[in-house]
Length: 152
Image (cartoon, rainbow, N blue to C red; front, side, top):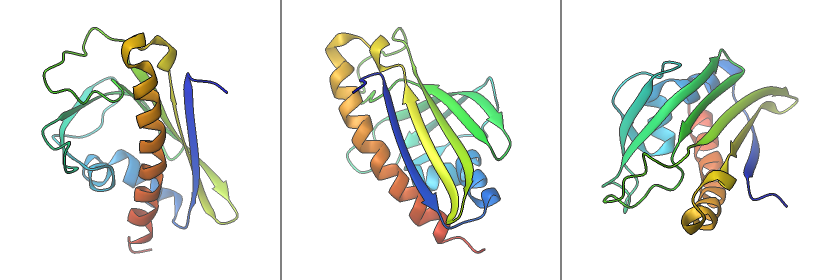
């Protein structure tokens, strides 16, 4: 078992373009992810927003958009489980979050991979891994509910 990488997949009963927009439109991403984003996602740029999930709504969200390969791959870097509002995480390494889309007989297979946990400071590594492992399981359910509620 690796502690450096989390991988979760879900088959979504939606079109590839619907899933793609849910991932890469900042407003749609925020709707299922639980954040109010301040602007669009642009490769090489930072995207910021505010978490809207109860008990975490005092936190800001900062993503460094890595790659946008239309209807195939969307990735960003971030500080995993950065939930202490008074802690400066900026000197820590970031993990890489990748969303991969693939055709599937049941719709579109969405796989999220978050890697780089072995570089996170040891004092928070296990907690960040555990919380994000559970978090991604929940987020895959959230995006499934979101895209199935969209008009075809």
